Image 1 (spheres, helix red, strand yellow):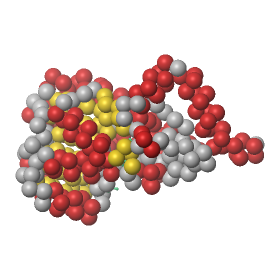
Image 2 (spheres, helix red, strand yellow):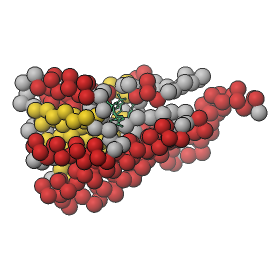
Image 3 (cartoon, protein in one colour):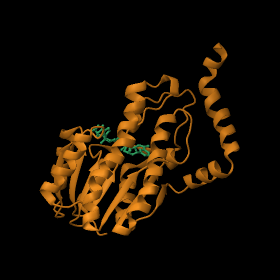
Length: 274
Ligand SMILES: NC(=O)c1ccc[n+]([C@@H]2O[C@H](COP(=O)([O-])OP(=O)(O)OC[C@H]3O[C@@H](n4cnc5c(N)ncnc54)[C@H](OP(=O)(O)O)[C@@H]3O)[C@@H](O)[C@H]2O)c1
C-alpha cells in the first residue's frame, strides 16, 4: 500500500516512536490521525505536519487507550472526518520495569495490561469492521524484543508483549482473506521517554549497548515500510535475532547467563540479608 493520501491512525503519537511515525506518515502525504492523552503535544505535531506541504492532513484526538469509550470515539471521529481507515499503528504503551513483588498491583500491573494489551485488542476490534467493509487495510503492531525474549524485571511488560504477539499471529490468519495485512515490529532498546516512565534503577547498569540502541526515527521508517511491504515479523536491529534463536534453542544457557550476570548481582544485598 502506498501511504500517500491514506487514512492512518497512530496511537501514542505524542512522543517517541509514535510521534516519529506520525511525522513520517506526514512526509508521505497521509491523512494522519494522532491519538494520545497529551493533546497539546499532539496539536504541536499536527501543526508541524500541516506545514510540511506534502499534502498531508491531520486530525487530533485526545484518547486514553485504557478506556473503551475513548477508543470508540477515536474511531468515530476518524470515520466522521475521513469515512475510511486504511492503516492502524497500535503503538501506545508503557512499561513499569521492576521485580514483580515491587510492582503496584493496580497502577503498574493492571495499568500495563489495560493499555498495552486491552488497548491494542479493543482498538483493533473497533477498526476491523471498517477494514473488512473496505476489503483492505494494514495493521502494524508495536511489539518489542520483550515479546520474544522475557528478561527479569520485565515480567509484566513481557507478558503484555507476548500477548500482543499471540493476538497478532491469530489475527493475521483471520483477516488476510479480506485483504488486511498484520505486521509486527520487534524493536530492541529505543531512545524515547519510555525509560523515564519505566522506573528502571539498576546496580549493574545493564542496558542496551549503544551500537544496538535505535532512534525513534529508525523504528518509524520500519513502520512506514511495512505499509508498503507487509511482513509477519521484523526484529530491529537484526542482531537481536541471534538472542531470539539462543532463547529458543539454548534456553538453559540464556537462563544461566541472565541469572548469574543480572539477577544475582542486582539482588545481592537482598539475598545476603536473608
Ligand atoms: N523505547 C523502547 O525501548 C521500546 C522498545 C520496544 C518497543 N517499544 C514500544 O513502543 C511503543 C512506544 O513507546 P516509546 O518508546 O515511543 O515510549 P514513549 O516515548 O513513552 O511513548 C509512549 C506513547 O504512548 C502513549 N500512551 C501511554 N499510555 C497511554 C494511554 N493510557 N492512552 C493513550 N496513549 C498512551 C503516550 O502518550 P500520552 O502519555 O500522551 O498518553 C506516548 O505517546 C510502546 O508500545 C512500547 O512498548 C518501546
